[in-house]
Image 1 (cartoon, helix red, strand yellow):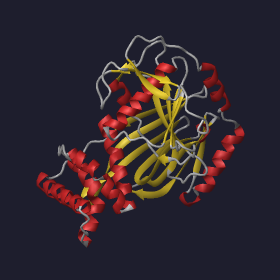
Image 2 (spheres, one colour; image 1 turned 30 degrees about the horizontal axis):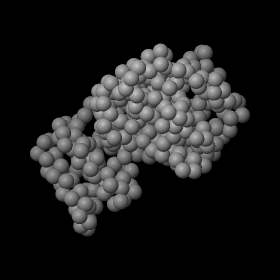
Image 3 (spheres, helix red, strand yellow; image 1 turned 135 degrees about the vertical axis):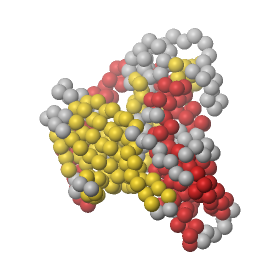
Length: 367
């Protein structure tokens, strides 16, 4: 699909930006239009493809299981929306292609429930070829794509050869991090790898990579977080931990639990549950760090060189803003988002920490 033009059941994007209202609104517009234009079949948005030449360049792993909450909040008769991370052999291990699958409520017209950005509540969108267009009058929902989409989906079915190729590719590319695999219900294959650490009798993993090979879906990827993994004959459970602290004193806090349950009928369910309870810190200390962060960003904005101590402090800046936000510093979220362009040009490692902080913030907010 990435090598064909966009149409009434398929859209492609270079990237998503749902950290801002404009990005949220545009994603919701396309979801609304695709759902209305395909009342009896799935429609898709592929993320990580160049518009001009269809080159597959990939995007960062995006584990936003709460995207449905965003859709439910802004759309009436919201479709069922799933976001999956699809690994491609030619992409770096930290890049995937994002696949947004949209299943409409059959016979129900999807519309905007309330205003967002420049789109008004009550607006209905439809696909006009490759463009999502607003319609503000009564619409007869037509079904024109079911046979085409069904054919594409049937050709995308996996087979034993592709599954084995996927397993061998994973095991070979993750040799440095003790790759493992397990077969569930004699059908599904889950592969995982990570840097193992034992603490107080428990085993944790960092630099974690987990894939459901049959579906060519990357379930989890992180270079920074720590997770615990447990499994039974029919379940695979991931608990993600978040490291937070101040002044070189850190603790791990449970962030989210994801449980994959495999069924006898070659099906599976994925359930996620937010576990996070924000830690509370001394407000006087937080005021000092918050103001210091603001001063650091002002220095970067004005291209003033940082001292050695400030270079160390800026590595902690994203996490410190996050802690401030969790401790009711309401403007800390905006200050963190404003810092993006300056951290991006300052240092790749610091920018990676920024992206992890935004990911955590997104999870907590949508929940």
